[in-house]
Image (cartoon, rainbow, N blue to C red; front, side):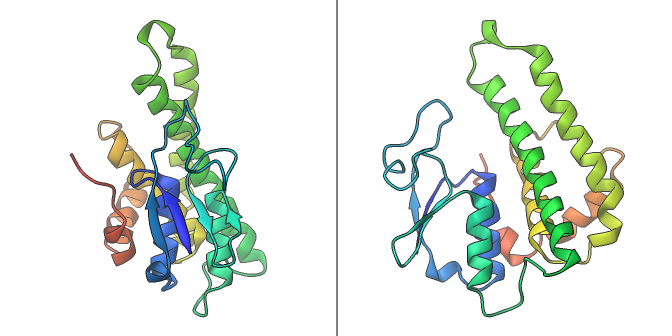
Length: 203
């Protein structure tokens, strides 16, 4: 398998964490590609017309995207414990993944607004709306973590990758303020080998 990836993408990190947790990381060849929101990557377009990462090329030559599809594919082919549970637990895990991915969507849009849009064209109210989504997602994570903090599933993996991205790109956000449950949980979960091996580059 080949994974078209960017090292700083939190969605890529989610895929890689799951690959490590399911013992499949060594079966994936990492193919670095540039990822920018203003232009599709020509290396990726033949496999994914959106030109986005992550995109997985399976051993059979099929192209899979986005991170949610790739994660479920890898989980389905894993012989070990599943990170996509069955029954009612599945819907809970998927909902938590959706919350974490929504937090990431808002965080990425906020970063693009600040890092890429010319200052004269920035829309403060729009950015404030994205930051409100981030805060709301963090508050929901804090409130619901006691019910799932001991689990290892796609919901906790996605949540950890989202919080890690905030540390990486928004170190001054202070997301831990008044969220002691989430802060303590992430401090522990972040020590997992899968998280350590997939941490974005610093500096």
